[in-house]
Amino acid sequence: MKIVTPQSLPRERLGTDLRSGSVHEIWRDPDDEVDPRWSLSLVDVKRNVKSLHRPEGTVDHWLGISGPQLRLVDGTRQEKVRADHQIVVESTTPLLLLRSSIGRAKSTRLLRVTRKSEMQPIILGRVFVSDPVEFDPDVRAIYLISGRLRVADTDLAEGEAAIFDDTVPPVMHSDGAFVATMAIPCVEVPQGS
Image (cartoon, rainbow, N blue to C red; front, side, top):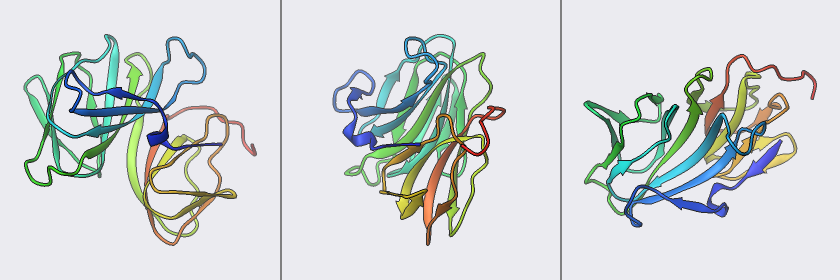
């Protein structure tokens, strides 16, 4: 298990305007650093993003974490990004990220998984955790949205991620926390690791 604080990682510009926001890569496929099959990122949107380009042959999965409401526009399709379900974007047309005019002072925070289109779908979700919980072995990463969470012998702080790259997620303890999960179905993970 590895603990990652996304805000302490190098950030990349979001879109073409420097003031639009930033992207912090949390974790990428450990099997291929040069051409990863997938990557998990924390995205902070501060302004409307007029043209977010994505690599050919990839699919994006989006999940809202916090902040003002945001609409994702993919060609002719528009969807509100919410915390209770993921949005999957398969087309390669540039995306528009449009923020609500309410709460402009705060950034909108999202999780994004980008995967190669030939790879099996990834599932992003949000759950409320109360003491104790054991996640499915398909869960490869969690992100603590709010509350307190103890993972094995480590206290996870809000805004931190725990990565389970080659182990089954341990039992977690909390008196109440909202957690985002990233699962890759059908991954074979050694039991008892």
